[in-house]
Image (cartoon, rainbow, N blue to C red; front, side, top):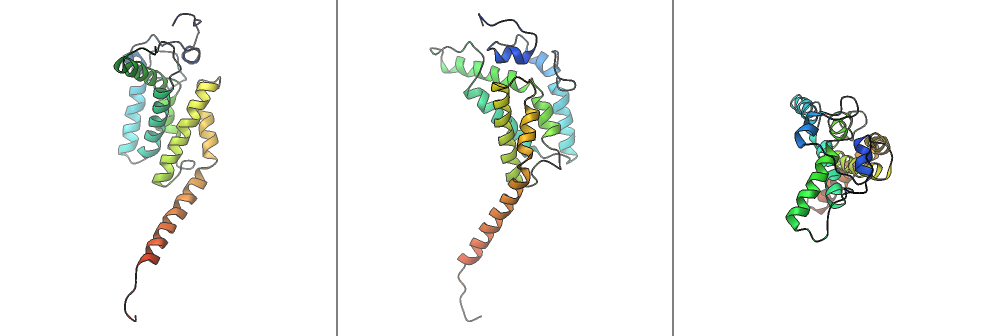
Length: 192
């Protein structure tokens, strides 16, 4: 976009409203400056697939994290170039490119595969993991939009890890409440 200063990192370019001048294949292969080990989305996806097949990770936290981050970027893109008079198809394609740029940079895929699924800090129940992923995704995009660090996902993980135990306890209580509610609703007939 015109008027955007040339910067040295992808996060600076995105933060200032610029568009990344890399192809999708270059982003997927990691042919750009990125945190060590966090650039190649294809390698990270292969690692995630291997860990999922080995049943070492659950997809609920990672997918809810990526979907939440993607929805936030789709609805509120920070790149310049979206005109108000553009058709829906043009607008949607631009927004999808913004989602691609945000998710394939800044250690997002790395965090979804390795950091989010840490068994000691992630919520243990399915609903808790989904809420955990949603909260980490929302916090991550907040840190990326308003912070100065490219890997704001690390700070988001630290913030949400502090309540992952509470998410588990709340889900267990919710299940117990539902279970006890069903028990008291049943009518008992007879003298037994």
